Image: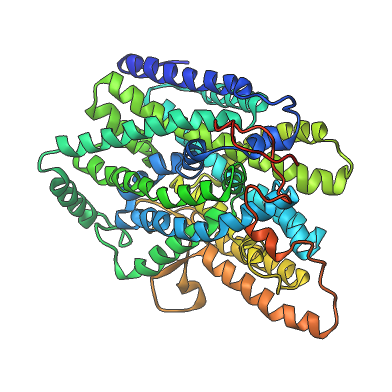
Length: 548
């Protein structure tokens, strides 16, 4: 490993913070340790007993990731206003998720579900549909974990650290502490992550304050920059051709957020419905930080920041290195690093749970013991990290944000079964399966048709899988407008499910049995039917609890 002389203090501070966070992850195995950690209830969901503060930090660590700190400002730096789609996406996410998570929490606790695929199996009585939901969730999670790898790798590159082994070492330590401590590790690590995020937002505000004429200069410089580029798709303001892409990106990403397995893992770990409701009401506070961090793309342009080796994902780390003292920059870079490690841990745990409960136990070993489930989930979570590395090698997108958007295209196709299934069982199980397959095929074909373009917006760098905005010109329309692939694929998915359901009923094809009941979706702490762990992990040890 080689650290350039000008980065030694940065690296020392960065490494110290990262070491502290990893040690905290290992110590988490002792934090309110239950008598038996060898079950998915404890290892994979932290005993389903996190209170207000731990849930707040865990969900924040789940949702606001390296995507926030690296990918969004890089997109703003590269193409301007379109990159701000992440702000309305975050605004839309919370009310949408608010409507869904309490119902998901209740029915999961009543029936002991750990994954969304288990709920689909119970709601629609279909192993095949549940298996497809599980596989879809696993495949969609890998690009998102890959985005975290990108976030950490650009920080290391900015500090002059060459070679792949430092990145491998960091994720090996992450894998080791989550292997040992389960969800308790990222729950505690997320507290440090959010404190570092606060530091980073403070750094962002200082960057803006230290810029002559502040934001006015940043906006003016950005406008001058985009006016001179040959790419007609960029700009300080949205062009008419970008309106549809911007809107569908925001809506599609908001819908996809609930469908990701790692978000539901954070939800199911909460103690009760009130905990979730309070957190969903307060989470929009993070949107303020997101808006400020996105503005760093324009600030970097005004500061004359040049991406390292042409990699736009290095814009924010290079900005911190350029404008701050080394020790200050080291802490800000550590925020990006920890902001990558924490969500990657939750995502891999969620994917491990999904594989274990909905594939391993369902198809391979139906009578697996809780200890066997926990062991398989541990190893499956390691496999997800390896799959994420494969995503980087296979896709190599221009902007790291495309990794999240491509994963969103895939996971969006589970929304009819999981999201709508929380409110209605009207859909036929085979219609939902047909819609899911149709949506996935549509999404993959459209993603294949999207090239990766160069900085001029015309030169084709890569012929396929270069982004997630599908040009409507493929339909023969005389327009430069594009639409987020995930939304179009979801429309196809829903159209098939809605059309095929009455046809199957007319033919007398039986629906699967729904083993859930209306009261299951409103059950709360104190309900005798509720599956509840006996140990509270977030204090309040004197409150009454109910054994399973």
